[in-house]
Length: 365
Image (cartoon, rainbow, N blue to C red; front, top):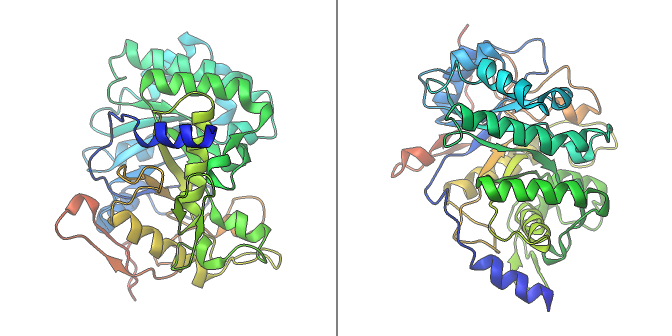
């Protein structure tokens, strides 16, 4: 019975923000020693007609370069900074020095407090998370920036104990206490829940039982949730709806869920099944197509799912398996890692994106 109650209440929740069309976002990671200068990156984003990006710090060079541009920017508080920013005075100083000097010339729209804190190896970070979020938001209020800049925290899909079928979505027991506080904060500040969702990881973990087309957002028969009877034709939307159900089970129906990261690696080690240029191109091509159609998930079909693609560049200094260094659409020299083709909606330039390959480098020296 709980499934029917949740799906009814979720479908008819009232959302007071992000009702219009916005463009696809992209993550601009910088764990590399060979990336182009921020101004060149801005030129690249402008050529792609991408107007939303996220960085993983508050790099002043990036913040300065992006001033007076059309690109909206989400900045990040590094995980190691959370303990310090629990202190309201430290948080005020951080916002005063890292955010205020650049706003509004640089369109900072969000602050990501940490990244994947709930699944980080350092379990003490969870105890720092909510106090740091509250202190940063309080600082924004003091500086009259809170109506312009939202505060949230990107969360790995691994925080879910159950995600299949989507209506079974449930958080892991060990995160319940802190997650409840996070959700209370997001609801009170009307901020989104950010999820890092990668169908690639699920496929790589069980390639014999998961359809590659389903993971790649390609045409397939899909699956029907036995409780909601909703049909899912791709894994990404199923993952997002699982997160929505998990949030609803904790009593929060009106929080918007956005995808802060998703992507597919173009290269991997021998045991990284599916990490190929062909699959990466198909996944990102299909993702862009769906974004340009302003699609919502089956559970929230009338609410466009906001997605940030990972990532703009391959990053040669990232640790871990080979795939970690090969999520980028572009090589550091500005050539495309692979071609996903041109897509544009001429009737709505704010929802346009053009990702085409060329013999010439997009980034000029």
